[in-house]
Each structure stands twice: as structure tokens, then as C-alpha cells.
Length: 532
Image (tube, rainbow, N blue to C red):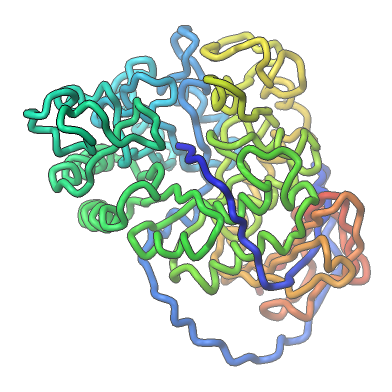
């Protein structure tokens, strides 16, 4: 759920950089054999950060976010549903995705579902509880996982407990909410949004009710919770939730939405019970803000060093074991295609950065085909960031949702932005996303938590970023060029984390020549060495 927020920015004090090459769908020959001398022995600095236990499977995950009513309609009523999601699992898996996050599936009066009227059921427009169980069973058969939205800050005017307490001071649920007058007429709500009354978390019965609701879905087989607007809920509630969840489901992931650009703020939420957090410091530096088009590092409006603090925090600030989810856009932000003003190179670069930098990538439905969307004006605004998934060139056909199709929508027929138009084009954005997903799935170095940022990139110190990543059997060098001009850089083989032997496999970009690499505008290069 989006929170009105003035981003202060995350300014990195370290000058770190490296460079990259534009990807190509054509196969690449291996680069020439590159052998490095043994790195100089260094005395490791003691790591005194606290440790947290987090689910190991989540480090391996690749996520896909679905706004259910916009995705795929199985019954022809114009609204996407749970059975529609089940019908498109082959497509989702083609992206290399193994974990879904669903925006709220609960009964609600709003289209977005964040005014939860019943925490233990499914919105009838989206299906039934049995449909939910069927989706879950299908996911398990495919070795996939599911996260659901958990909305603990507020509820709905239609929630039976609130309905009982409103204008009824004698109600047993009066103390469940934050009423502000003796008549139970006025109440605290989510940023003054009157249809989202806030829970009173000081009431032990409220905490038990919400935690029991979370456990209900986990007991069904759900693999984790995406905790909405975590900053609106007291820290001690999250600690209590963690204790209850981990006691019964130790491998469930607790993922928090902490909308803040400062890594020190996120650090505290890790310590208060979250396994994983969305990397807002990285996202805000990359884009310039959730309502901004044409800003941030990805548009060349800020130096790449601005986003490096988010990566350094993984090694120096956050507890050991902390997990971060890296996202180019979501349901509360301008879509990445609009944020980069529909520049194809920058769309690909943003995708590559989310998949290839340390962290766990997530794809917002439609992002993989370049769907556009930005905040609207007036009463209808976030709907434009949640438009129906474009399956067909004509925007007509089985499964197309129609719940939101105003004349001024962003996505139109035959605009090149649909699964049908991109499916068979090997150079399409869709197939680039599939390639990234396949690389992450096939190479453990691209999933491993070990990494080292380059201090600088020779030949491209101002606009490039590079990172070594490695596992027990692989070493990868990934370099990004955040500029509109090609860059020629020196491969930093003397800084490799261990001796590199044999030929490097070119995963993305061009071959290196004499330890020189040319990086295309807004490009990425990825080289991989396998250990003997």
C-alpha cells in the first residue's frame, strides 16, 4: 500500500564504480582465456553485526508480483481471478519465476483490496477459498511458492468488528480501534483515508486476531507474508508476529514494506523481526522517486554512486542473513517503462540490475513486456499503474481483463506491448527477461550472497558500476554502464576474489579483447568462470 512520502535520499560516501555491455539475444563465443595472479592475502575485518535466521530458500527465489484483478480472467466477467492465475503458470515459469506475491485476495469494498473486510476468506470476484487451495496445490506440484499480502495496520469499514463498534461505545470491539470521541464517530485511519480505520495494536486481542489470521494462511500452505505498510505498526507487534510464525512455520518468509530511503531505518526493521525487506533505498536512488519519470541513476540524472549505499548496507549495516528484494517498479509506483520514458536500453538495464546485483529480484506483472503506467490525477490515480495485463496485440481475447479501460489509459492495441507481439521475437523485452531468469536459475554465483563491489572501473569511473559475485563453483563479473555513450573499460582481473582459470563464459554482452571490454550505452556485461 502506498504511503505519502517525501524521499530524503540515500547518499553513499563511497566512490565505487564499474561498467557494462548491451545484451544481445544471439549466442556469444567464449572470451579468450583470462588467468589472474593469486589475489594478495588480506586479514579479514571482524564482522560484528548481529545475525538473523532467515529462510535459505528465499535467497534462491525469483518473484513475480500479481495484482489479481488485472492479470487473467478465467470466467469472462472482466476481472482477473485466482483460476486465471493458475491457467497462466506456464507463462510465469517461462520467466524463471518460482515464487508469486499476490496483492490482497480478501473480501473488500475497494478495487485494490487493502480495506480487508474478512481476513479468512477470498474476494468473491477473485474466486473462492477452494480456488485458492487449488492454486496453492498447483504451485506445490510445480515446486513454486506463494506469498500473500498481510495488512496489519488498518482494516475496512465493512469489517464486522468495526461495523459493530462504529457509533456504538458499548460494543465489545470499541477498544479494537482508535476512536477519537465518546460516540465512536471519529477514528484514526491510514493517512486520513476514512475507509481504512486503523487497528489498536495496544489491545492484546487485536494482536492475537491478526496473528491468527496470518497463521491461517500459512497453515494452508502459503510460504510467506508480504507485510503491508510496516512503518505504521509498532515494532513490538512485528517481534510478536515473528515469534508466532517461526514457532509453527520456521521456513516461512516475513517480507516487509518499509518505504524509506535510508538504510539505517531498514536495519531496525530487520532487527525487529523481518527476514526480508524491499530495497527502497536502491529503488529510490535508481528512479528518483515513485512518481518521477526521467529521474535517478537509471536516467543519468544522478551518479551511480547514489545507489551503492544500498548494496554496501548488505555488507556493513544490515544484520548477517538479511534478505533484500530488488524491484524496478510495483503497484504503488510509476511503471519502469514510464520512469525511463520508454527507452528500451534503460528498461533492459533496470531489469538486468534487479536480476544481477546481489539481492532477490521481483518482476511486477507486465513489466516484462514494457507496460506503461504513471500516477493519475484526481480520484482515479493508482489504477493507471495497475492496468490490465496485455496478452494480445488487439487487447481482445481469452483472459483479457477489462475492469479498467478508460480512453486515456497507457496501454493500447497494437503498440508493441503485449505478450503476443513479443513472444516470437528473440530480441524482445519479454525474451530478455526470460534470459535473465534463466541465467539466475542456471548459475549459482548469480544467486549467492557473496559479492564485492569494485572500487573503481578503469576507463569508466564516473558512470559505471561493477561487482564480483561468487559461489563454491563459479565466479561472475557483472558490469553496468549507466550512460548513453559506449565505454571501453579494463577487466579488473587482479581484483578477482580467487584465481580465475580457463575461459570466461559470456553470459551477457560482448567478448573481451586483451582484457578490454566495450560496453554499449545503458549496457550490461556478465562474464562467468567455473572453478575446477
